[in-house]
Length: 122
Length: 108
Image (cartoon, rainbow over all chains, first blue to last red):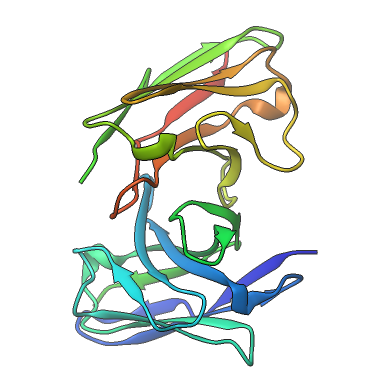
């Protein structure tokens, strides 16, 4: 079945870095755009970034632009999020999600992972 | 950026009742690219509706979506015990995609 499994979360000090991973299975990963979406404790959902299926195009929320980098390895069916210069306000559960449609991303999400928790605290 | 405002914030209903959730956009949503998600505590969001009115795979037909432009509605025709959750709308017609703040459907 279609599945996304995130890993790499943890507790990190402000200003430090962390890399999240998302392992995909059950579908042709290389044909779908992929997203990261986060949810701060007790808050709503915030889109973070998207990467096109071939990895050549990316888009970011203003809140993370210049600090976070989304990437993918289609040979390993894995999505990544490199998070640098972390701030307290980046504390959240981070979900990876598949775009609604193969090909060009529509920016909707039809399959979600279970999430990985990132806590930025000194 | 398109701002989505959901109402009401909380809906208190009993099983078997009808739930009507509203999502209003600050500007027209392109091509009715509006989705609804359900989220239960400790779980990831689940896609219910996309394209304003198309049910996602496996979603029961008691869930229906409608609307266009700036006003959208999610209707649950008869609430089942498993439907008590938080519901989010999301527009994906323009970047950045944005979510509403959520409507909590709680058991009366």
